[in-house]
Amino acid sequence: MTNESDHNSKDEQPDRRQFIKGASCVIGAVIGSVPMVAGVRVSLSPLVDKEAAESGAMLRLGDLGDLETGVPMKFAIVADKSDKWTRYKDVPVGAVYLVKQKEDAKEPVVAFNTVCPHLGCFVDYRKEETDFFCPCHDSNFALDGKLKNGVSPRGMDTLEVELRNTTEVWVKFQRFKANSKDKIAIS
Image (cartoon, rainbow, N blue to C red; front, side):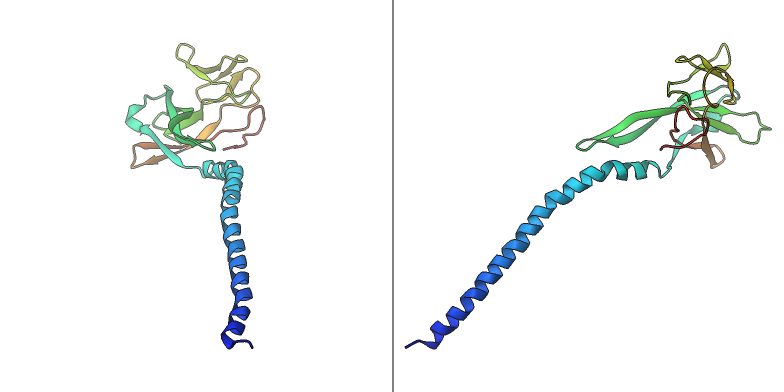
């Protein structure tokens, strides 16, 4: 003779086992997906970082009163950088020359990237010759950024400049494709 309670406990056993089995599968899938999602995030981080770099943030470099008319002044560009595991604060990522123009000029300040458009060497300002000079392949640029002589495919790359509060100089720092006749932003 079977007891009714024995009959109920036998019916409940498979349901509890199925529930525990299903719950274990769900918990295992959730736990297993965490490293997978992290791996995908790490793999895609260069794409995410590239999008952030291309957002074109304006950087305050100084005041108009700090610049001397017609004399380029170099400003270092620093930013927080990160690789897959480490974040670095205030890392030099480039530099900009600011040139204050004469009072009657259309733009009060012109900004140039310090990288030569030929092969990416750094361009120096030569006070005695009053020009910009790329030592890698002897390209010379006038103070307006135009190529005077040399092998560079174009003049120096200008950057977007904003004057805020009538005296603050803000610049949108960008890099451009080297060895191209066209000025193509890459970041």
